[in-house]
Image (tube, rainbow over all chains, first blue to last red; front, top):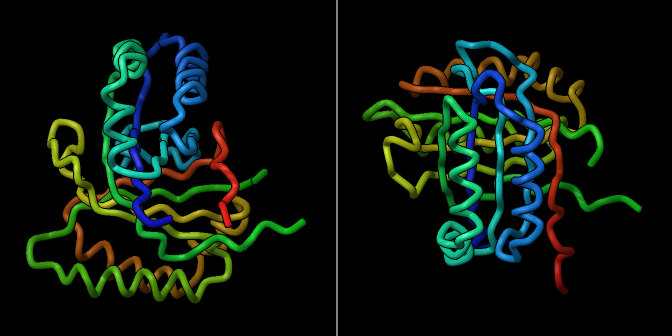
Length: 110
Length: 110
């Protein structure tokens, strides 16, 4: 896992935004980009405004290295999608961080 | 991966907080709690206030199910640690979400 970097994005969509279209666009982008090692996302179920601060979705992209993340961010397909994505949001927050794997998941069972 | 739930916490520590002690306490807690399947964290390197909104650390705990997350949150060891943790922070944000694995990581190479 050495060198892995995560690009974490929290978002809240504008009312009336075409959320499904945006999610599909993101999945298509990520599938097409070899630099993206894995991609997980989810919709908050806590729904406590004091804790979530109004964010409803988390998107987490994992890269094998900071160079791969930089290449992804600089790619024209990312730029094109980012414009669509940002236009659909009324709140966004982004952190990039080298991953410290403090507790390893157990090996998958057959 | 069906049923996995993530507990994502973003934080900014108070000036002068004993960050290393808090991080060690969190690692100890997570190691002791069988309900926590895996735990990753990291410190933001983006450092763009407009994007990070002042958050500097991300902590991401993965659970095999919503029941495991609920058991963790209700555990007295979690409650004891949470009090210490919150006292060290001046900003915190939490989302809980069922994980959609949209792009699977490649199998590890030998």
